[in-house]
Image (cartoon, rainbow, N blue to C red; front, side, top):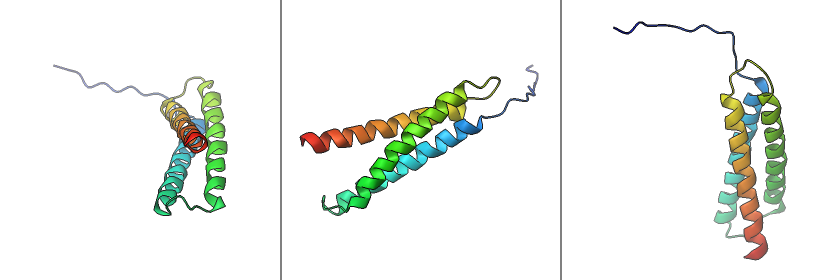
Length: 105
């Protein structure tokens, strides 16, 4: 028979890690919207989409920074920290692919 056991802890998620995850989601959503709208307009895009891509880069760098700083906190849960770092790295990788394709295509 398996005994039900509960582990009580005072650990909590880092606020910077949560903010990093939120910035990662915002970055990916903005980038997806800009790419989708560019596709719908057959490449004839306004400058605002380029500005949105620049903001994606800024948000992604800030998100990575917040994730790295939140990893230094002790006795916390790091789920949102790792999630934020991964999402922001993915956003940076995608914007890099888009810039590379635009330069050499």
